[in-house]
Length: 298
Length: 243
Image (cartoon, rainbow over all chains, first blue to last red; front, side, top):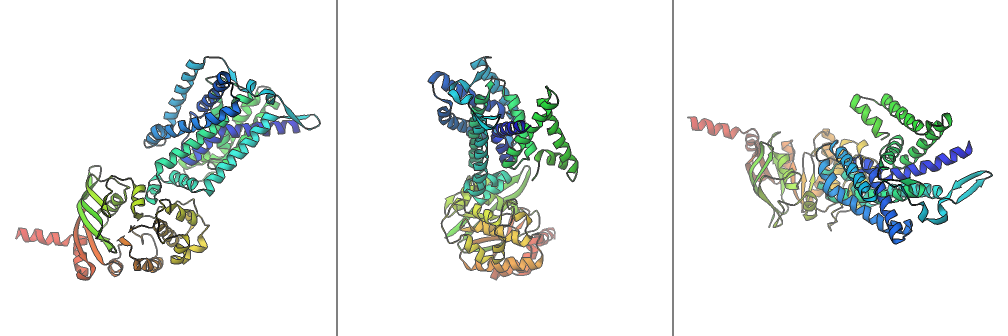
């Protein structure tokens, strides 16, 4: 039992790391990036490509892939999301949905149907573990992933709260017109925010590849876990994402205990229960309730 | 020296011409009261000057530089600051954070957070309070402080007393007096005519998107302004034509 809880917490850390970029874009820029999963897989493929063809350890590869993903994030915001966000709240969702399909199929066309993993390129680390106490082992990569999630979420939170740039990004998210009147360049602030989000996606891509295998169409499930973790934790709170990830993993573990096939179902059921609770508890009309359910604690 | 020069400015909301061929020249140190009924085009005019709304025609010059095509954040950097109607604070941030955001353009000048708290002493105890939970007067003071943090050459105050109790309005204007003593150029929209006449040294009246009166406050009478406000002079002329 203890073992299962510990493993679930570690898995939750992984979900939180997957969700970093999605949660950041959702809470800060009010954009639900449905291409999040595919971009994550793209980062995974880039790391794999560098490892396979240039014998770069994925950790070193991150030094190249992170700036590259940040550049992609900046370009996405400047050339795609910025324009589509002007068309209303729903348009960015459609745009990123389309983008996800494009990325998936390009990846499939280029890399084929074989599943890939980054585990072979990190040596012994992929199977090493620590013995916590008698009979309970934790995988080193899992622990590293949890720690990374905490560090990233924590530093994002600090960055947003304490730095001038973080303040400018928050102000732009709140009201871009007023941000301009105050002297902030709203386009620049949003583009930097998107670049940061994609920077974390590069690291999530590493976690994805190190922890298991992926193929061109692996983005969907990753997006789903990330989305559930974000919503369960409450949009607007980056720490909430960590808690959300852990709660999701615990629910999945409980589900798997009840029935061998209950792993995914446990997570989904919890997700729906939490949505329903928020829907019932929220005050006001239907649209308010819907917003509260998805927007979470404010 | 002219500080702000507006030439034949046209601003539209779709089909509606909200501001039509407005020209004006502001000199350094002017305190202008912009007077007009609801819908006269005051706010649209000020939004066009501050860059929140792009004009259909005409030019705007600030300190001799063309700013018509600049985006609003660049106008702030050029020395223009707007306190928008309805305050538009970042309500989920603290007073201090709002003020710091005002300093984003990093123009040099005398204003800093401590100075703002000196001028608006009621704010200092609200330093770490989220502005969304503060009273209207405190919010208005924060909005003015935020605009001042950019050390503007021209400060535009749009409806500072909107939604505030008379007592609080007095307080805001008391604070403003210290500001008026400096040589900052100010454009002020105020519905309370006697207050506007007391504070400003120049009156500009707008009616249906046009300037119908532009005189030094010392040379203008209350009746003249009231006529311009309601467009009474127009009716008289029309009657005159008919007769």
